[in-house]
Image (cartoon, rainbow, N blue to C red; front, side):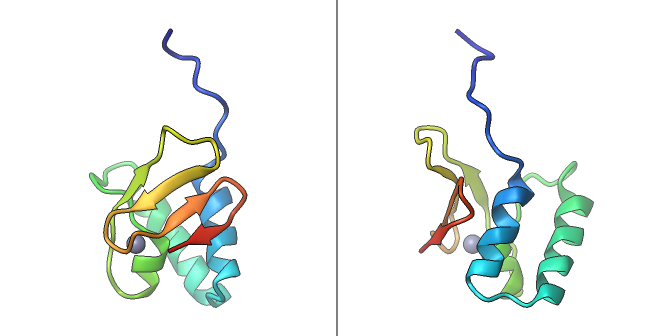
Length: 88
Ligand SMILES: [Zn+2]
């Protein structure tokens, strides 16, 4: 059966709280949100918020096999939970 994926939160609804949780400044968060919206339609790799605040790009991959983790970054190995948590 296709098209029956459970509801998943909007990426920024997860990534922004994750950035707050690790103590990122509001200015850096705002910068990432602007960056995300600018690139999201054409990017071949989703930017990782933690890599971005370190001056890089990273590569967020959707984690489909779990219902608690939304994305993981291939560069820094951070994992972003549905509830805005981040583990690395
Ligand atoms: Zn990363």
